[in-house]
Image 1 (tube, rainbow, N blue to C red):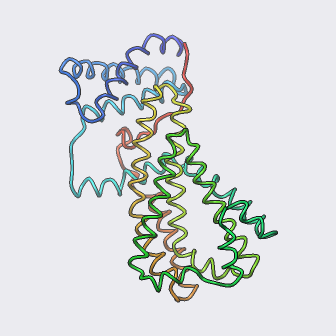
Image 2 (cartoon, helix red, strand yellow):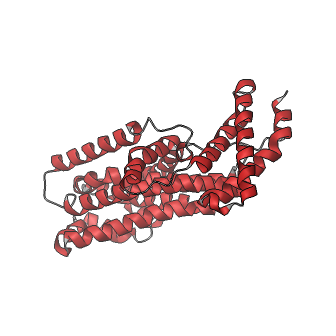
Image 3 (cartoon, one colour):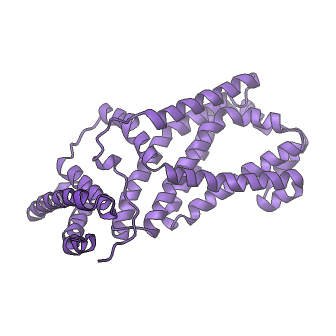
Length: 336
């Protein structure tokens, strides 16, 4: 049997199972007794179809699609309602880092959408600071402060670090949430958030380099910048996932693809909340302090290494078929 014939014959059952799983996202209580029986039957049949696809079409996209469909069915049927500390620990020790690794390409794309505009703005502003306001409206005020050698972040010390920390966290959470939520605009608003923040950093850094202010600026940014920027890239990647699900739903319906992508994206955003708190505390209590630059650089290096080890190395023993860890395939629709 050809893969196309297999798909044509089985597609109605898969689509029905997908519809039932989407409806049961909040729990099986949303289904009638007959629908639960049907769900079980379709799940067993999909499991058999997955075994056949792995044997006969191991490299065909249908195998990836069925693997994800069966994983969702397994979770819906065998899901345990576990709460409390164990759920909290499991999320941060397995779910969040695994989700990041399974979707790292979106975070990389987010990084590039931030870094490339930042690099361009840095070069242009360094050559001609008057270009800065054209790239980032309102930049003339910041550039004037840089030219005058004013370290504006020192107001954190006078305004009160606890209050400043709360304001910084609120601002960072707002940026991360906008980058994430912008995905529902097919990723357009997410790209705008990433590009605008990249341009802002590039303009400020370019002006600082031009007016011999770079050591002052990076002495402030270095300590908290690694974690803060990493969160922006992860949140931007989460938003891009939503946009990609809308643009390329693959074998799923557009609604189902968006629901699955949103689950992954929400896990990433929830995982970023403690990171934003840590970054806010560092930015309020260490970055504007008069501690030696070497100490701040050590904080940057230590936080970066710790974050990298956590995201890359933690949680590699989780069950591969659990939907919290299953990546949704982004495939073109396969027509028989």
